[in-house]
Length: 199
Image 1: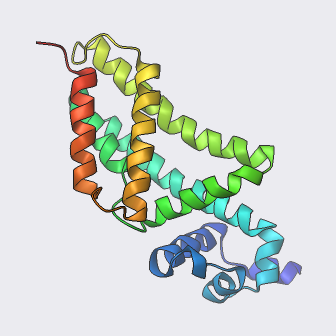
Image 2 (image 1 turned 90 degrees about the vertical axis):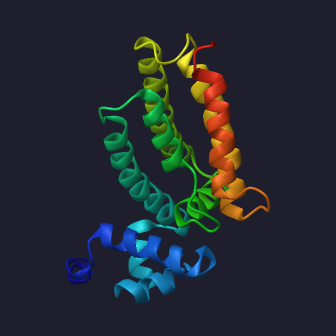
């Protein structure tokens, strides 16, 4: 077993391969055996590292969210008006289209969370919390600079993320009449009504 561990691909390569398989073949084709063939490991070896498919999916989501979090940080730290950066946040949040691999994974992890252990649910909450904190901070910045009207950043962030989650699920599952561009238009209208000063 020690030799097998030394020859195992880096954890990040396994997680990237899992995400690639979701993107190319869909979540239903992501089995431990199929992923093992993809990375040159046995399904038993993968289970040694990840313990279960639920854990593999959650770690893959955390890896993907780490990449998105870095991109979000880059977008939000730019020197640009808060309203422009808010559009960038929304653009990053909303799926690219039906079967978006990141959102496909999120939906599956959410579904499995009903029976997940407390630790797994806390890790999911940490992912959600990072999105929430960044949005609330951006809204607070917009208020402090006078770009946005007086509002409760935490309260609006909660509402806006609920709206984004609902619309994003519609896009991810391909619900007719809610393609990405339509959703972005609806969200921009909502944001304008919610944050721009009354004239």
